[in-house]
Image 1 (cartoon, rainbow, N blue to C red):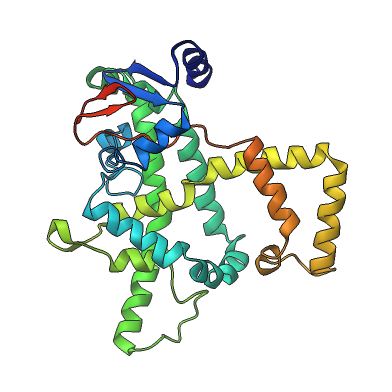
Image 2 (image 1 turned 120 degrees about the vertical axis):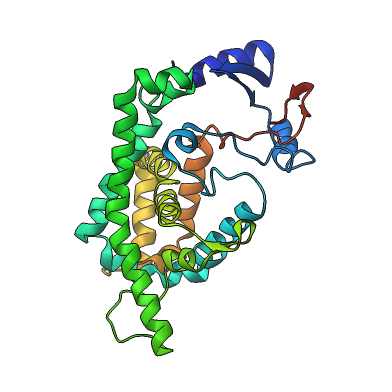
Length: 309
């Protein structure tokens, strides 16, 4: 069942708020931008900041990741670490040589394949999606699908752990020598380093487990994959349809870079390219649904009661 066409029909018939029962839980879908802003950013923002317990949490033990953790000290810690230590513009520029140099490494390609397989599997309504209904029964009836998902998780861990342990050893050498080790490395700082340093104050100030680090690395690599690829496909389709846009883009690229390879720094100064991307996102938004939110307490959304759990 394709949910989006169904919701479009229901929105036209009943208005910008629709409640559907999926499995054993009621889901409230909001289409009105003012209602959505009030619920997620306005007075109801904190009330609806939690996440529903997903199948990946229940059956696969994927916990303590940013997109699945309830709002609170752990979520704030993980998000602050990601935004401040990795996604900050200065950090993004610092990682540029590593991205360019390591993209074709066999280990990177293997991780890319494993992440793609995991993302495709968990996104399929006929695979992991069946466990949203009568979990106590479906986890036995569809045991093969569950084992496939667990095998994909094990494959991720097999690929990530040697790299994580290598960074752990590198950090140990740095701490022992009191300065950067002479061992060759592509970069001196990485997202994994920040995760190895992270302590969870709500759980006795313990460090993250290996499983949690693997899950956070997987989330980091796959969280924006689908929306990015979808947006790129639509933008390229629009560029192909409009030769005048192609010509102007080519002229801007040639004026900026000449015969040199296009660098990340050069892209930052291409105003027309930015305009094309923004217009593509406006016409073809890649994500029509935000991540699901759960009410921490009883609340009201546009006259509908949301029960806290």
